[in-house]
Length: 183
Length: 103
Image (cartoon, rainbow over all chains, first blue to last red; front, side):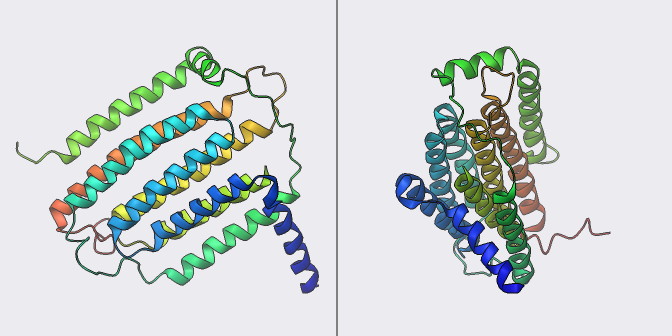
């Protein structure tokens, strides 16, 4: 029975991995992505892991381009790499005696954390091939950006406005939080 | 399509691992960004491969992904402001030491 379970896992794993020669670019980008993501969570020096975070975000932009989401790839590079990653590096530099000293960056829960994330991975890898997807390989609109802009201004105009209020609230909240008291 | 979903699952698992094991609050925020990106890859994949009947301009997944990016940016800003405040008050951002809200 155990052997049956293992062969089933192997089968679904093969299905998940797919055919490398069919889309070599995807596998190259995924390799870089997973490797640099691992670096982000395991490196001792927090500044180096921030640099690897930038590499990870760039590879995610590459994945978006492979999925024909060019505008999202541009947004990814502009907002994530250009703003969020730089903000994180700023915060590291402002809070660091951390970059210089070799202090332990991980806590004692490594075993539990490994168990949890392998549990999640096992569940996901088993359930993805056994789900019935309505795969259609949709023909996306040719003028992707054009349609996206039109959708944002018509069907999704309410969430668009709400999200701008959220951004304003975050901006004010950050200013209020980071202000020195009594000034 | 399953390859993209598997990639997103791996990225999400790495993010979970980072959130659970990092001591540094900024490290936790970076792992959170990884998890946001995994969710976004899933959204864009479904947008590309799954047909929603009755919708001509099928870009809902990408619109959602854009909203996720915006929310992630807001989250990073507020989170880093809190981290700076913690650093000012505790002289360090080791989340194991910051236990004032523990019952």
